[in-house]
Image 1 (cartoon, rainbow, N blue to C red):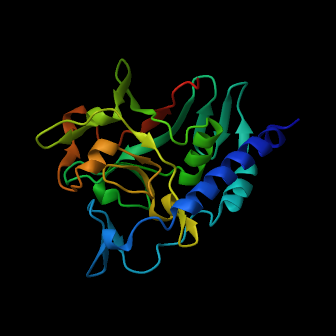
Image 2: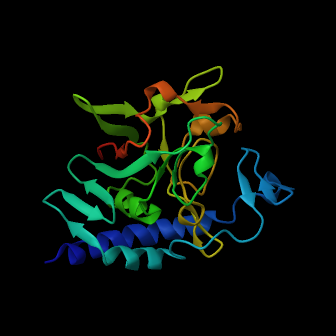
Length: 248
């Protein structure tokens, strides 16, 4: 039996479930939580959303997400799958994909975005399709979990491996390692994370796949910055690795 057929029902069930949950959540944010400004709206967390519909991108429903994934999931070995440029290891419970340093000087609102997203406000950017990252996480039942997130890259003498939170500085404080995989929402006719390019947020952003509860609770967009001394040299590709907890 092909891996495509073996994965069809687990992926379908997981995506339909998360799609339904996301649809339930889509209208639960009170309208007064955002205020209109010139050119768009600003949430209390500091997130700015441009005026008008977000740019097209990604599937418009859980059914489309499911259908798109079935066409290109490849089995690399007994425990490994390839979903676009995303790798999933079932035994290690990891998903990984390439990225590059995006912003080192200005304040950060995101730890990781798609290269089509807010790269001027993010520490890292990736060309990996956000829906592929999400499908990989769903195959590990990662939605709602708190993964460890690591950044690795090659250097002289071996490989560097640094927890993502250690690469982000905080004015008058520090960032802990507690990330929450909330899985984004379907809204405005599309998968919000894909449409906005948001993967890992440092402010309260329900469109991002991953949020940081403590960072989001600060409701500030001017306190996070890159720990430049700990980052790889310019132009060096990194790998983002999400490690999901073992299931009970």
